[in-house]
Image (cartoon, rainbow, N blue to C red; front, side, top):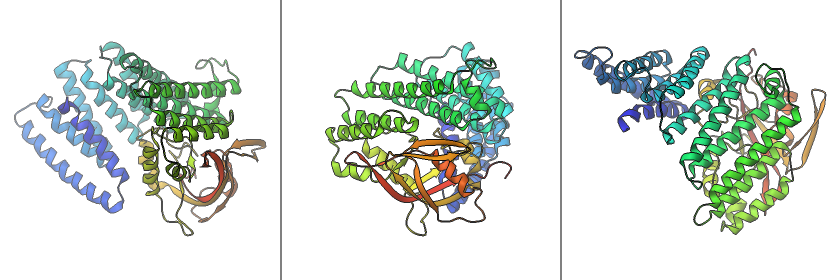
Length: 464
């Protein structure tokens, strides 16, 4: 098993490390990858002296070399190597075998990185057909593959042609639900792995909600009962369905923790906190009461008041990308984010917004390994803002001839580093901030006002 998946780990780690390191460290990493590439090529040349082009003995060196090529952004060469790996498996093991699946997924990821959506879509369609032809064991490996494919379809929402976005949304939905149903069949009801599946589907529905309220052709497609039928659901009805689905996922998450022995009270309190966040995002219910209830639940679970006050002293942009089952885990994540922030001229920034891609304005990435963000990150522009939030109060303003009210958004802001490089006007930024919701600062569970620095990192829109 390890031999089969070792190189998959190399490929994913190579990309992740290169993306996260500072400039000098990235160069050092690239130099090491070049050395590794030469080593793997030498291994291949030696092996090929005594074997033909499609001998299985070449697989390990080919897989490792593909990982290095991805790490070096040599995506065309990586594609040729992955194609050869898949051909070796087909020739030696048969046209339709389970061992091909992870390499097909890597081939799709590589096509997305190089912007080849035609190739990525063809391979994704082929992969779906294979799932109907190749018997697979229902296990964690299959579920992980399905989640990866769902995320790749979400990348398609951001990166593919507009006419394909609805297709990607529907495919991601179908595949994510399949992963959830398989997980619920093969794992017991208290298995913590279910929580990640539920939260993954919740974030997916929030992305559809944001797309819907932004308007446009894709929003109209999302309202269709079935593709290309022209039969439309009401906008309010669609929003309500997204909200209800999120509540259902949160209910299932809470049930998982209630089934622990003993009940994980801190985790159930965190679910309640995320439920209050969900109310803020959809402007439903009374989030201020839900935040107070979540705070009291965490206190009752044994979390010290001082720890809670520290955790809730800074707002968070919603939705939080990961579900954390404890305050300690969530606080560690906040600390890691703060280390990515630059030092402001007035004071250190408190908040970071990182846009997903140039095609998805004002949307944070809903996935764990955002390929499009990795491709475009060097083109980002940073707007450093002084912002004021007023708890969970409603803020209303005219936007494109509509009077729109939002909960827990920026009330006022000042641009601290406005320059000629900025691609947004003050009015355009004000519109974006009006659709950016925050988990408020809480004092003993009561939402409070906040004044601080927001580092808003965004992309110039295509065509600018």
